[in-house]
Length: 78
Image (cartoon, rainbow, N blue to C red):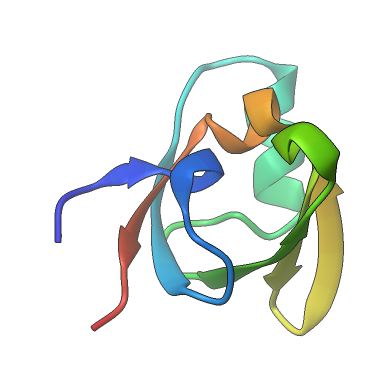
C-alpha cells in the first residue's frame, strides 16, 4: 500500500505510522502523544462532518482534528 494521511484512513483499519510532517511544536506534540514511526494506529470513530477523529494509539484513545491527523503519514497494515 502507498503512504497516505491518517485523516484519510477508514474506520476500523489498522495502519502503521511512517512519519509526522513539519518541524514545529505540533509535530513534537504528535510525537509525544505516540505518533512515532512504527506505531500502529486505528480510527475508532469520526464526529459529524469528519472532525475530530477518535484514534486508538498504543492502547489509549486520542482525539485529533482532521488537520492535525493530516500531518501523520501512515501505511495500511496488510
